[in-house]
Amino acid sequence: MDPRERYARQTMLPEIGPEGQRRLAASSVLLVGVGGLGSPAALYLTGAGVGRLGLADPDTVSESNLQRQVLYTESQIGRPKPAAARERLAALSSSTRFDLHPEGLTAENARELVAAYDLVVECCDNFATRYLLDEACAEVGRPWVYGSIGAFHGQVSLFNGRTGRRYTELYPDREALCALPRSTAGVLGTVPGVIGAIEASEAIKWIAGFGEPLEGKLFTIDLKTLQTETIEF
Image (cartoon, rainbow, N blue to C red):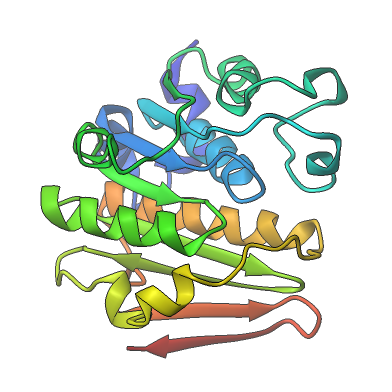
């Protein structure tokens, strides 16, 4: 496989070029969660030529996932998500290395796991994991891309980048938020597709070194109305 041909439509962009592509190939990204958000993020990061992708998720594929988690198939129901995701991603790119972390991100492994990658893309669905990730990234000096969805809307930001802005600055009520009961809520299947793709775009921008990252900014979108807003915080 000729990388010049494979990534030609990307490297012809002056913002990326051959140097940006080399940065992507030399980079490592940890995905915390390989579900609704992680599926499109993983596909686009792999397609873009990221050299090493970590897949951290303790969950297994279920039938209800298939409406929005586009990495998986009916034949993979019941399988651990990191292993099932690697099958699809490896078929997309033989040059990308995939490291599996089926234990997910935990209090015991967070610092060491985050330190092993250049950038983290958060694709989980709970506040506790986000606060844990925020602490670990601050401790070891790693930026991370945040994404969250619900019903018809979603939001994206970037934390612990050049200015060191933290998730706790945007959501300071840690105790109250983590105490909220976890519940299953409805979501339009395309919402995580849109937000996961934007998360991947933020990661690619950061790695290749172009554009304006969403650092100190929160991007929101409502797919029912297609209204968007970018709020500085």
